[in-house]
Length: 177
Length: 339
Image (cartoon, rainbow over all chains, first blue to last red; front, side, top):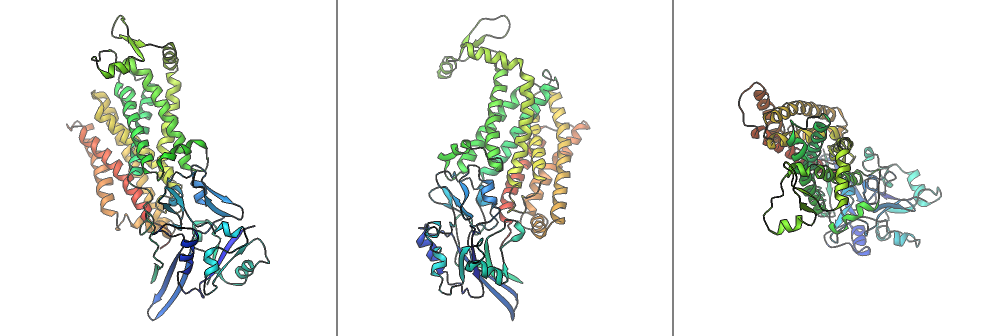
């Protein structure tokens, strides 16, 4: 079991519905966000290329955040989902400093918070909130270990990239380009 | 041309627009931690070299300052936590792969050894029990009582346990000194490793940072002893030691930048923040010129018997050491992989 996500940058229109869905589903405090939209524009006018990506924690295979956590609050649960136990977190920011994606933030209640791949939904067989609301169906979620799953086929069939592969974290969110 | 925008308005406090997860207490702690490491190292080193007569400041007063530095540094560290009341969670686990876990345990053991070291010298540092009748005397007299001895000493511990422990630790002082040398090196290197373990921050992610911070810590320790000591031989010796340490530090810094420039794109970009970019002026003026080059010149002149008040190079070295850590922590958070 290895959860992963694939996002089709060709279909994404950057509507931020995933961002709002996450904030509602996970009760993210006002002014904070666990996922966000990035736009990359490359080239010189009029030869421009635009790429829109919905970004979040990459739930990496090689997790610098879990490694640097001094109390063991950051940990990996079944399916490779990286989570933080709020009661064990002292808010030292070691994980925040070690994340090349800046996907973690200080929750105002005094712990570090981040995307959980909506594990409370996923364990009931549902998709994460962001995936379930996407109006263009550009996001796919599933088990990468199962070669027959929809996401495995999509990742195998399309040309995909990951963010900052040079950081060596083996991210598990794939962007179809 | 390439332009990246976060369009959904990610503005997580402490993360955007520039990462600021660690605030002023962290570089401040890195400075006082390095200072304590230097002071403890020289105390143990001079004791093991059998220079107890010539170097009373280094052996007896230095560790006092080191303990104060460690306590203040620890308070700063706890202050910077988002949930300070949970700080005890650090001591419920040992995590070999987490530098911060190493640091927490090292700091705890170092402060215990430091206290024992001071304890063995208490009678020498305070030979007379001549406190005026006040609150402090009442507190102190819970543990000690006045005794009439021949010579200088006129107090002793009230409890047999304390007396026995004192006797035991005084006879084993050399062993404690060896432990202290080892621990002070671990403490000094750790302040650098804490930063260099983060692959995500290109500026910090260099193996040289450990030895560099250790050298800088030893150098600030020597500078502090130079300021504190009252005898010519101590001032002179630590001045000489500092010259050596400053030269090593300059050598390390040069190599650090060579490493960045020869490295991957993100590393080269990190170096350019210091060679023409945002941090150029603060770094070169405060760290290199004020903190290293001018003290080096002043101390060399001193060796050539030009009269220079030792406090000037001393304070400059301390200033340089502190600024070095502040700049490294701040710049490291500005320079990132993405965006």
